[in-house]
Image (cartoon, rainbow, N blue to C red; front, side, top):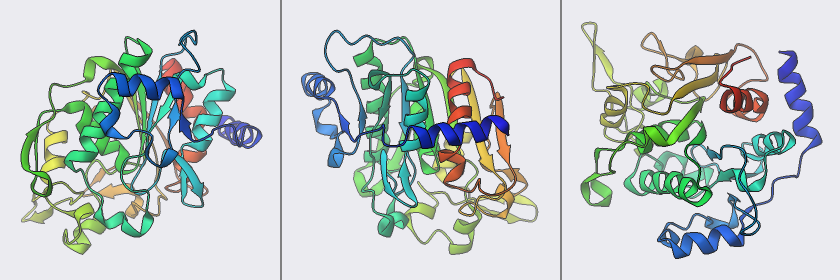
Length: 306
């Protein structure tokens, strides 16, 4: 916990270090290599890239994937993006050419119920992972995710078939990206779904039983009806990377119920190597991300949880 407090102090000292924009060098490369249509610099609110061709990449690149209706870099309370984490990594010697984040979705909390594991979201996240790896020339990348970004990134890495009726029906993302990922960190994810989605009956895209976070229901002790996308990504484990970790809290106010869904901790990533768990405030849904830069860094850099 002492290390956690140190992380908070370092974040405060480094506040303001992250500025929203992909570098012009990275944007030029994206356009020249077939990635221009993904609009990775959506709203000018993204991060990463080399300053010039001579900017060397020393640390293994880290890709940050935000949660539902958040953005790569935050703009206020509840929409904090990855500002704190990026600033912490910068304080540990990482450069802009080694840290990457893009905004998926519309970054509008008023429309959060409309976000789901859609074909466009999955394709964008998957393409960003592939682009960063190719651009930096890295053998592998590290991926740190939060909230819905956890499950989106898991499916993007897993690849394979899926269906999105709103976007043309069945499609195939391609082969797994497992060999491209060293460390995967899932923060406050809903890998087994959300109890709140059971309560709403899958009435919104976020909670739907095809591509949402619907956790299913019990029928004479049997768990049935788990959303198709969750069933698919949980049918196998440890495909997210060589090392897989989770960070979560039993007082997460968004996930609720002590993080438990039908007897399982929903924020644990199946097959994970380790975890950091909090049981008291201030480590709720957002602060499990914003106040854990130290642990995120330790996981990706040293494959450690202390």
